[in-house]
Structure formats: structure tokens, C-alpha cells
Amino acid sequence: MKALDYNTGQKPVWCPGCGNFAIWNSIKKALAEAGVEPHRLALVSGIGCSGKMINHVRAYGFHGLHGRTMPVATGIRLANPDMKVLVNGGDGDGYGMGVGHFVHSMRRNVDLTYIVHNNKVYGLTTGQASPTNDVGSPSKSTPFGVVDEPLNPIAIAIDAGATYVARGFSGDSEQLAELILGGLNHNGFALIDVFQPCVTFGGKYQYEYYQERVVKIENHDVTDADAALKLSKTKDKLPIGLFYKAEGHPSYNEMHPEIEKAQVRKRDVTALLEELV
Ligand code: SF4
Image (cartoon, rainbow, N blue to C red; front, top):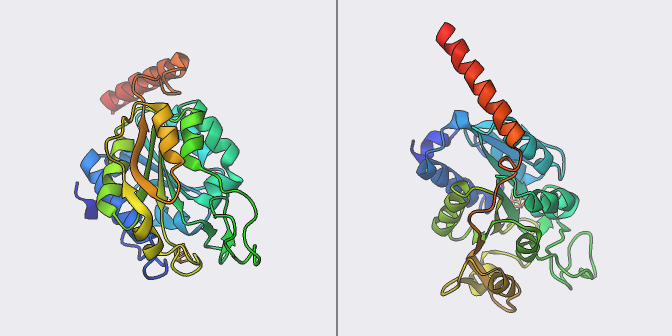
């Protein structure tokens, strides 16, 4: 399949210039490269502008409640190991409302690819500060500036047990597609945090802000968790690329042989039924 084959024909209603467009393109490119057929793909979205992604990618789609993508995605992954499960949500959804589910899914190493549109605001509700916004930034909910320290999703993911941890930038959709492809091909929990400017309500966090600060990760041992953690705490610059990758850790499905056995039985029955038809 080609990237364009994943189009549904529905026209996105995101604001012109929104980083969601580049993420959409990167997702389709990575899916085509990975050879994931639409009938083998479940796309789970949370609430937010990013949640509309399920309207624009040919796949089975589930638009969950705010912050509840992980339980739904875990259920799909356990119930049908033949499905690739791609989760797509915003930073408010995943790192605010859904942070508990986020952490527990990573410690279980559920085999999911989780793309987080990190624009530091709740865009759909017109610009309240999200948990990744920096101290001092004004927003609709913090007119005198944010006072809470920002959450570091990369550091949390490495510590919590995610086995593929990356960060992309919607201003570099080529690299982002490669990072998503790496996540799709990984067995275990893959986080791809994405700097994505909200051009309408994002305040100072626009393309120029990121273009001045992002640096591609180079000369880094992605198997070294301590080095990855240190890299995630870089000051002044914003590293993008693959921070951490651990091979050989069983995924949640593999930790439950009884589920795998049930699936094998189900596949046998399905094959038998197909033979009979
Ligand atoms: Fe994108 Fe922000 Fe517009 Fe939502 S409000 S579509 S995040 S630019």
C-alpha cells in the first residue's frame, strides 16, 4: 500500500498550519512502509484536536473518553493479537487526564505504538496550559504564568518501563515517519512524543520556537537507559530522535500465555469455519 491509500476521503478541519497535518502524513507513510493493512489496524484516539485522526486514517477506529485511550487499546491488543494497535492523543489527554493509564501501560510493556501530539496546551478547549507547559508561560488557565514544574514524558517513559522511547517534531515529518515506523515494528510499548505547534492557541510555542531549539540525537547508545534519561533532561536544547530501545523484554501478551492459547484456539475455530463455508 501507498501512504495515500490510508486516506478516508474526509477533509480535516484542523486550523491551517496545525502540526496535526504533518503527523497525519507521517503516520500514513509509516503504515505504508510497515505494510500494515487497514483491516489489521486499530486506531484509538483520545479527546482533543488530535483525536480527529481516526476520521482520516483508514483503519478500525475507537474515539475514547478523555485520557482513556490506554485501557481501550490494551483490551484490543489482548483480545486480538493479530491487530496492530496505534494510539493517538494529545499531551493533555495522555499526560494529564490519562497519566495513570500511561504509566501502568508502560510498566506492563503492552505492545502498543503511542503517538502523543505534545503542543503544551489544550487546543480543543482554546488554550489552557497542559502538564508539559513551562513555568512562567501565560495561557488562558494561567494568565500570570504556569507555576507547576513541567512533566517530562520521555524521562517518565524510560523509568516506567517503556521499551521504545522517541521524540519527533512535526516540522520534520521525514524523521517523524521513521520514528513511528520504528515504533510499529517494535514488540512492546513504544512512545513517540511529538512537538506539535498549536498555531492558534499555542502562544510562544510555534514552529520558530522549536526550529531554534531542536537538535537531532547523534552518537548516543539507545540501549543505555541511564544515558537516555540524562539526554531527556537536556537544558536549553530539545533533542529529537530515538532516546531508548530495549529488545528482548516480553510484551504483555507474551506474559499471558493463557491468552495466547485462547487466541490460537480462536484462530483454529475461525480457520475451520472458513473451510466449512
Ligand atoms: Fe491544531 Fe491548535 Fe487548531 Fe487544534 S486549535 S487544530 S491543535 S492549531
